[in-house]
Structure formats: C-alpha cells, structure tokens
Image (tube, rainbow, N blue to C red; front, side, top):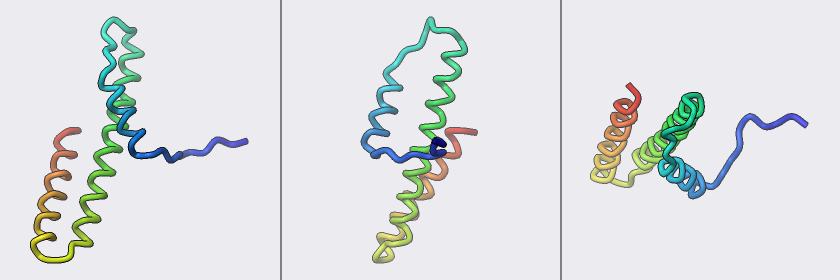
Length: 88
C-alpha cells in the first residue's frame, strides 16, 4: 500500500509537538542527530508561520469594516515580515 505524501493532524497536537521539541536539549548527541533535529524544527516552524500567515490573510479578506481591515492588514504584514526575517 502506498504511503500518503501528506497527513493531517490536529493543530493542538502540532503545537504540542513543537513545544516538546523546543524542550529537548541535544548537546552531546552526534552532530548528524543535531542536524536532523534542527532540520525538523525549522520545517515545522516554517509550517506554523505559514498557517498563521494564512489565518491572518483570511481575517484580512473577511474583515467586516475598514477599521477591522486595517488592523488585519497590519497583523498580516507584521507576520509576513517576521516570517521573512526568521529565515533570511
């Protein structure tokens, strides 16, 4: 049976996984393990930022009035800039 390329997990579990990974100290482990760990944490962090950016954009699109839209736009742009700054 072929394995799926993508899976879905609850957002709360996703956040718990990231929190747990943040708590792990890999000092003293093999550099290959540390590198793999870093790759996983970076990928999951990028995914979380992508989900948050999508949510911020959705709030911008569906804002009910100009004030809400301005706040949503500001939030979206801040998240977009933060995501860019984190990885460049």
